[in-house]
Image 1 (spheres, helix red, strand yellow):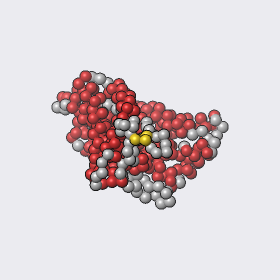
Image 2 (tube, rainbow, N blue to C red; image 1 turned 90 degrees about the vertical axis):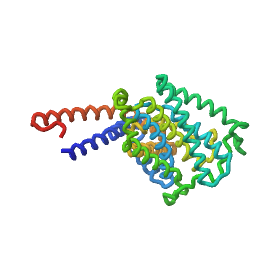
Image 3 (cartoon, one colour; image 1 turned 30 degrees about the vertical axis):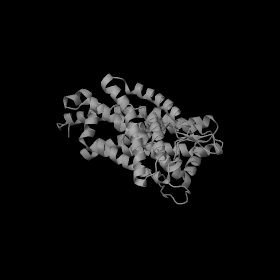
Image 4 (spheres, rainbow, N blue to C red; image 1 turned 120 degrees about the vertical axis):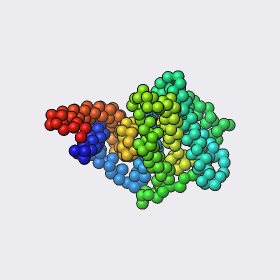
Amino acid sequence: MKPALDVRRVALTALAPALALLIALGVSAVALVASGHSPLATMQQMLGYAALPRTQVLIINTASYYYLAAVAVAIGFRMNLFNIGVDGQYRLAALLAAAAGGAVHLPRPLHLLLIVTVAVAVGGMWAAIAGLLKAYRGVSEVISTIMLNAISTALIAYLLTPGRLAVATQGSNNIGTPPIPASGQVPGIDLIPGAGTPVFGFVVVSVLVGVAYAVLLDRTRFGFDLRATGRSAPAAVASGVNVKKMVVVAMLLSGGCAGLVGMPQLLGASYSYSLDFPTGIGFTGIAIALLGRNHPVGIALGALLWSFLDQSSQILDLEGVPKEVVTIMQGSTVLSVVVAYELVRRYSQVLERRRVGAALSGGEPACA
């Protein structure tokens, strides 16, 4: 009985994101037909471009920081906290980490440790502000993190000016922090032959973060307390959990992970925080965390899917197809994933009631 139930549970878990993806494909197909383009030909073009070695490297590189952003969001979700501030947390962390890394010359291990420590500390402390406000003043973390995003944007604009943390780039109107020396850079990995560009070496850290997330949340007492508090704070209090402390710690962990989001790009490609540093990754992480259902493997698949859509869309302009169709696909995925999970949840409840009813009518224990 139990193996059958486990198989059914796994199937239902996989059904929701699959259903959401099918809905998104259907909406995108309608948009393509309405604009006079073939959905099948467009998908073939995207898949063909994604099969190129260089595109595959770009997909992996982009997915490496999408994954970190989604894990940062998922940590909050597991605690029933909505950390919308990942975007501001990682940008402020990347700026200060880049400034610290560009100001010193150290042996590689110490240099990298300094940069990553600054990033994690800044991201964690910035998120902890919202955690403290939530725990001790009852301020919604949604409101506080949105406001902190705006404050971090203004603070970055203030600091990223010549005479403070930025220097002018020769031959360009761009400005950025002083370049990080070679001792503070993470070498790439020649993972895909013929790509001509390496995979970010920091992708290894992304994988390790995923493993740590899975172990901490699902295999430790702390993770149990965190999930229990997220599901029912009164029940957690009755079992001896300090809810206020868990709120602050969860936001600290979420922010610390958010601080790592900019590191693949910073340490693997740009080596400086400048005006064109990637933005908006935190909001993408929210969508990917929802799509992956806060599970480390599901988040990884969602990050790769999102990265595939981002990178393969570049070929559409050259083929005369509006690449905004990818935005439609991503947006419809976010909307449909919530609907799909709700439909699957209700269907699961119907199946469970039928199982219990059949067990009771047959004289079997309902918990079998």
